[in-house]
Length: 173
Image (cartoon, rainbow, N blue to C red):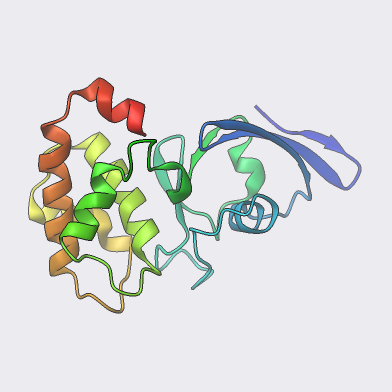
């Protein structure tokens, strides 16, 4: 679905963290700016601006994308999930809790991107090997923790999600 063009702006309608949002935006607006500046969702971070670090990762229709290099109009009619939309009314999502419990965070700058990328991985492959996890997370960089705790957190999250009925996990997401 293409956005409607009106003069110097386009009308963009997307679902963001479960809520439908309609905004007038300039066609050149990147998704990261829309989320951070227009919607106040600051979990996705600006860092490299070139799809290298993963700090700006959000899920677009369930797939991880670099919001720094994705035009907002590419999300027209789509579903965007940010870290702010992941926790449910009962608390942290099992992936978030695994990252906390496994000390897979330090400064937290990269954590939202890792968590959302993990969500996409586990939706695609519920029982990934450590090598598959490392490969899938290859576009996310961390300058604080090393990667062992992050890999352990993803393995832990896979175990947690496997022990929860699918309907319960979807309600939390």
